[in-house]
Length: 426
Ligand code: SF4
Image (cartoon, rainbow, N blue to C red; front, side, top):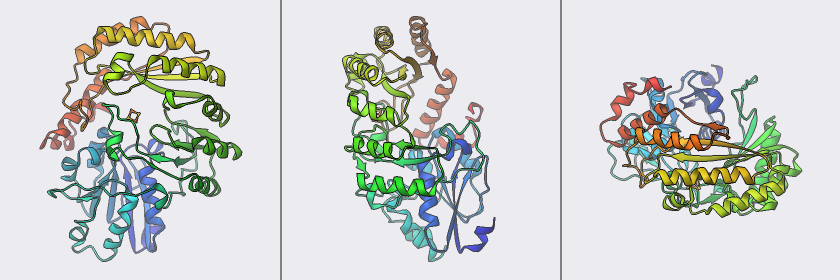
């Protein structure tokens, strides 16, 4: 492609899955903007089904473990490769064996220095970046993370390109991604998100968010803004919502923390165009407290009441089966809770039931995936919820995901991933 020939340096950032999912990934967008803003550099995003790796420096954004076989198959034989993203954060030593280096933590805090070193020449490049905080190479003793003090300290990825023609697979249409906070202040025992940022929260200030919105909407011709935040707890979220309302653009929100949503916030979100809300009670109250999601059933019921007052039309519940210590009584408790939510909610209630897949670096990482028990729990639960529309993944898919995570966790097993042992799953 022409721009590669025109510039002195180039970097390709690879999202090893379909473009219709990858365009919504923030990591590749951050790199795309950081690199292209730099003099003499050119960066292109490459997806599994779109684009071709051409640069001498190639980064891989590893968002999901199941994408790893695809990433390894796409990896060029020549050039320098690096990887980053949740999978590199969680399985650092194993992933490092397959790339020249990894970038860990806040990429904005280290990538500029890496690029600067690349500009000095490829010879000894890996040696020169070895001690940079946030750079990890196989065999290195200490794992460090690059850290931004505040999200305002880094330039925001304002240019967010979409293909000219998109189809229905692009679920959010052409949109502008607005990251408002990074990290999560809660610490549910099964979740890896708080660990990526060592339990610390970072926010964009309201002023900087307003500026990003104005500039982002001026640059990108989009129909909506998607808020990126794991739990939507920004201290000035109401002011932000009011500002978004003035812009008269549709806004979509992530899953929300029901117990932190007051009536005014719900009303503002609805006024911004959000028709359905997703909350994740996970299970019945007893087990919920055991997994450190300390929210009582009563708090969910009063949330439903506020949803009714705000005129919310759809509510989606995210629940799990196969959790550690989950017994028949817990399934019955969960079924009662769901039916109670349905009875109290005036709109339509949807249910997503997922098999618990233990994640690495959580206290449940050594938990076995008991297929037989999960199947039994599913049977009991579905029998009690025949009046509710339910979405569920395949048990075999969740089980394969667990097998892959288990192998990644054990030194030396990753070669099976490279040999595509799990390829049948896709
Ligand atoms: S609130 Fe959500 S993102 Fe935060 S720790 Fe719990 S499950 Fe993870």
